[in-house]
Image (cartoon, rainbow, N blue to C red):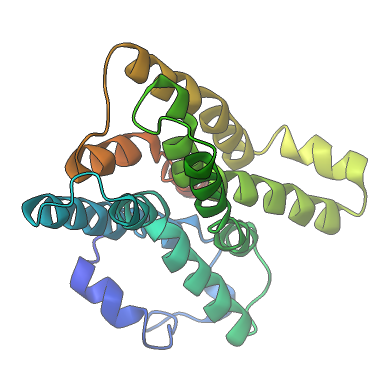
Length: 227
């Protein structure tokens, strides 16, 4: 939890080994603590990209918005996907955290398609009608993670009925479902009240505010810690 951004990027290029004095079998829980630390680097990169592009005069660049929203809304998905890939390469026992990471990785491209299609269709991406675009950048990976999570539960429990029964009692899945439902209401409300991402910095801030993907892993970590 206390790893710096520099340490994280160093770890992302190296094989992760258990801490000294422990074994892989001694690492209990679903490893959500590994996922929590991945959100902040994406926020920082997205905000820095937004400020830089504004400084360069690209306040309304479509390509710039794509980059800023991808970093601020999906940066952690890339890192969490790397975590899941490393878990498979290490042949680690399957966990909910790994399944969660795979789901987020596979959901990355969905908002790109939605954004591009909306612009082609003439949607005002800066107005109220375009509120859903930052939503998908921020949470399409979360939707993918939620789906991947329930598939993992179905597989581990042996049936859809048993898997769904565990789903509705799983704090991470419920937290994930809650933010999937509540975030678009907040984005729509902000647009109705007059907010518009007319600069790349505003684009980054809007996406960061919508990207509550750190909440479910935090719930999972707290559940592991205090159960």
